[in-house]
Length: 498
Image (tube, rainbow, N blue to C red; front, side, top):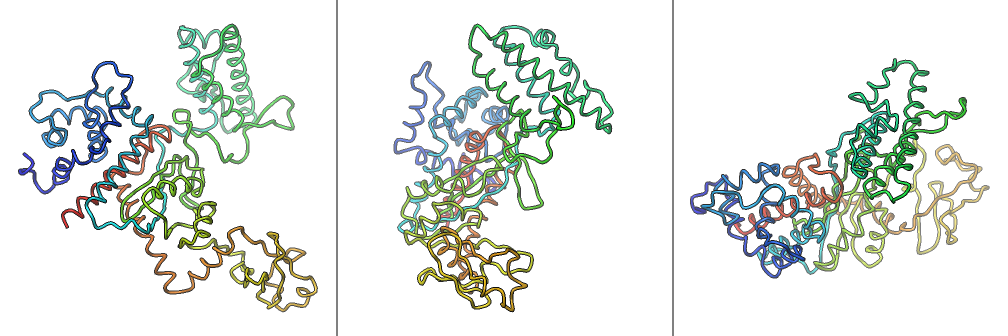
């Protein structure tokens, strides 16, 4: 069967050829261990792990996975089920297996297995590790809604949770709590106002918030004798967070609230996926969802992270680099400037590793920037563009003497502050190096080597797409990990063919 596969199906042939190698050395035992304590004998976990890889490679839903495993001979070849009339698993089995993978971090270990497979292939160097980090947007799968519908959907979630806890119908909860806004197709339809009328909007908002209070009081009364179950507590907390993040007191009108101006950084944007956040591709391009991060060594993805879109790039840096260190000491780090704020980057630089990145820049509206000053940390002084010097006394602020600035012929291009000063960063020696590297041909050539991680991200995007498959950061990290495993196997197959 494998010898008859056409060129377009060569990746299935490769998976068939390496399937035992991929799951050897105790990895299958770890997969089995995730089923303890065990009831009935599970479907072979190595088979399910391979099905997860095939699912991501072909971009199929769980229902399509079951059907394809039953009817596609290429899948049957890879799974070792040729000749069987039925699929070896159902949709529920796939869902439960993914949850076990998350609980035991087996998706991360699957990425490790592909890296170990690459090491056996040869052609990869690990004595002095050169690692590149980068991220890309992952648009969330949850529905993004405005304040009105967020509050309404959060109320509906509380109603559903309390109905389950009490064993009653949701309509009874709505009726007894007096919730008139949940009787229509949407909250806005139930309020039925002229949305161009600001006074009508204000009254509608406060009516909605009154019903939120009524629901909370009703739930508190019904759960007074026994503690509320976790799902109900979570639903109540989400409702309170949505109300607090989007509303504030209305000063001209006592005991009334209005919708807040501006958007809080940690604003919940979706009730179906509360972990989603607002994020930016750039200063002008916004998106809602997550950021996916990858660490690439020798063309292989060795570490991943998925964070809400509002989490800054540098925050997952430490755990990405910690994963990289398992493969060898880091000698060179290629990063985007968004990762520079991580203390882990400064620590690497101090330890002697080479850090390649563009330094932070500021146009400063035509005035002088830090790049125009000569900072000599060894001699403890700073020289300004007007050739005046100031001592570095140990603090972050370096102050120039007022008498030096008064008669300076470049005063018009300097700061407009009453006292001229320069703020030094804790990693200023690294930033000085980066600013210098950008001015040399060799430095710019080193910066261009970060393109390897951009190519890996492009491959991730081609396999995974740009939209999240699941709700929640950890589930989407599992999806990113199996995507990374597929991308790594592509690289191993290419090297073996070469």
